Amino acid sequence: MDIGTAKPDAETLSRIPHHLVNIIDYSENFSVGDFCTRADEAVKGIVQRGNLPVLSGGTAFYLKSWLMGMPATPASNPQIRAALELHWSDKSEEELKRELELIDPVSAGRIGRGDRYRMLRALEVHMQSGRPLSSYNIPDTPRDDYQVLSIGLNRERSELYRRINQRVEKMFEEGLAEEVAALINQGALREHPGMKAIGYREWFREPGEPVPDAVEVKELIARNTRRYAKRQITFFTSLPDVHWFDASQKSNFPGRINSLIDDFLKK
Image (cartoon, rainbow, N blue to C red; front, side, top):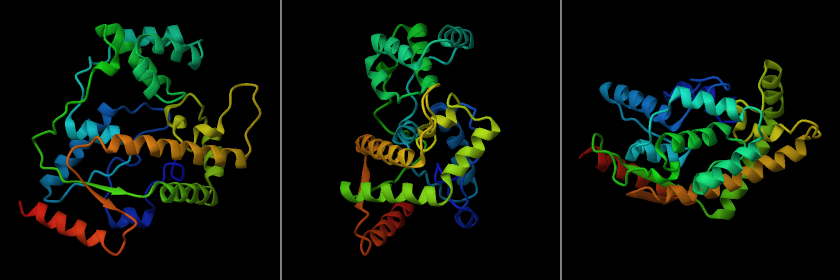
């Protein structure tokens, strides 16, 4: 899943060490808790080597959860989870979504279409605690075991959307259609967690529906990415103490960011 996830290319990876890249298979689930655990391990190792860790997003919810700490939701119960999966195995995602809307409409609104894993997790939390998952808030103060400098890059909305459309075009030029075809030939299914990501889920259809053509898929990926970016912007603005920079001011903001980092490292 190199192209659809916009992984750093080989040249970038050779210059700058990256972590949490190529760590799981598309058929495996990977939760925000998994991310925080692995990110903590990576950050600890980087600091011990005398280097500066950089967490780059990406998904604002994952970054916020690492920065502020995880909500105090009950740990997953294998027995309850297995019972839920069995009960809902022959039911549609629409039925599952309707059930979740009855007990936790906030989570139902947050969880994307087709994300069966997170919907079942929300039902599991409700069964264990009697409380909706959405009632467990992320702590509102940053963790105190690290000093963190938060830097955000902003763009005017129309410019951001133009760049998104351009990026999708480039993904197709680099062979996204062929990458997805190869994954499907290897056994990837629409139910697999990795295939629910934007750039991959658009290639799948319900049984009996016509196979989508590349033009339709390209438009869907661009649209879904723009919508995702809009939600992410809202979430990123909720992060505390962020130093925001206008990324379109190329002649000015890199130097200001370097000065900010220099001052931070002197503390």
